Amino acid sequence: MKSALFSVLCEIKGKTENTSQSACLFHLAMSIQQHQEEDPPDAQLLRLDNMLLAEGVSRPEKRGRGAAAGTTATPGGCPNDTSIAHSDYRAKLSQIRQIYHSELEKYEQACREFTTHVTNLLREQSRVRPVSSREMEHMVGMIHGKFTAIQRQLKQSTCEAVMTLRSRLLDARRKRRNFSKQATEVLNEYFYSHLSNPYPSEETKEELARKGGITVSQVSNWFGNKRIRYKKNTGKFQEEATMYTEKTSTATKVRGSGGQSSCQSTPSPGSCGPFPLTSGGDMVLTLRTLAFLQPPPGGVCLQPPTHSSWQRATAPQPPSSPAGDSGSFNSDVSN
DNA sequence: GCTAATGATTGCGT
DNA sequence: ACGCAATCATTAGC
Image (cartoon, rainbow, N blue to C red; front, side, top):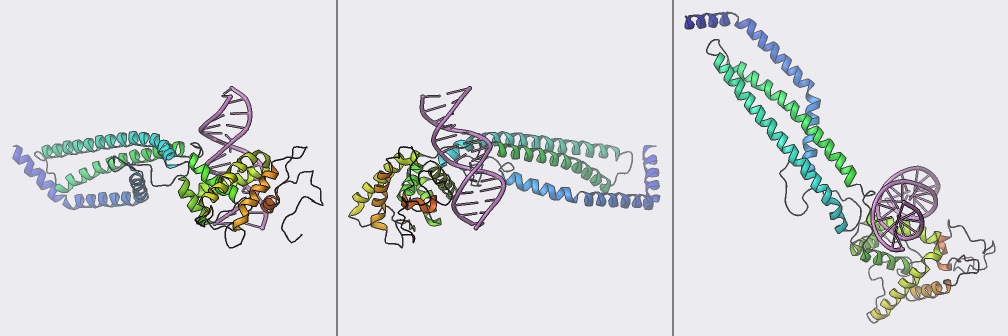
């Protein structure tokens, strides 16, 4: 009876082959359409995958140096500081990675289980009705499609979490660290020994960056800030200026027998460089700085003459120096 | 907690 | 692209 029923059903299925074929074609067409509609999301999925890979979320966690945080040279502080700043980021990223992988594993397992379940069900049904392998594949494909959509959502939310984390913890401005003493020394030494022209060249910046363990852009920032702040309140920096000029002059004396001055490989149009100012530059500077230490009764310091070329441009001249500017013995054409 | 110092960012001019 | 000036945001000293 059962086999008779089965054969009847097979017969009916055979008769309706055409219609079922067309139904299949319809399904196929629909699925193609669906796929076409999903094309942009697929591109999006690819982007998500790439990003997760780049952030070190997709691949298994690496131990040791340079695990995650990146290759992106986030400016901010010396290497030590950077690693401190990034350790929190790495910890949080690790958390995200763990959650991502466990969720992914969960979904994949659920997908496998559901597929097996449905396959078994179809096999079960195949005993009472004809089930083509195509039908099976179709069902499996549908299930996979659904789970892919879920995965996409998971990836998207993971990406969002990583982005938020990045902006929160790797924003250099938020995690500002003071430079190391070494870096500050190196920068100040250069600044005060080139006070007449504190504009280091690109190579000099690179060298200073290397010596101080900071980035070139940090060197640029530092000089930008320093010039402005020095110009704004020259008096405040006099102690520092004296300290550093004395330091460099003694260093020059010690190294004097070697022939090279304090700036071995840092050519600058200031005191070292193509102009024969080298030997006298620093000393003159020191003398000027020392003379400069005695502020006028009004408490306003006159600008040291040699520096005025870069300071004069925008710095408001103190009222004590009128238009005649008798104090300016600048070695300009005016004299 | 307040304040000065300081590194980074932004907008503008050159 | 670079520098200046103003400003923001954080750190460090008190």
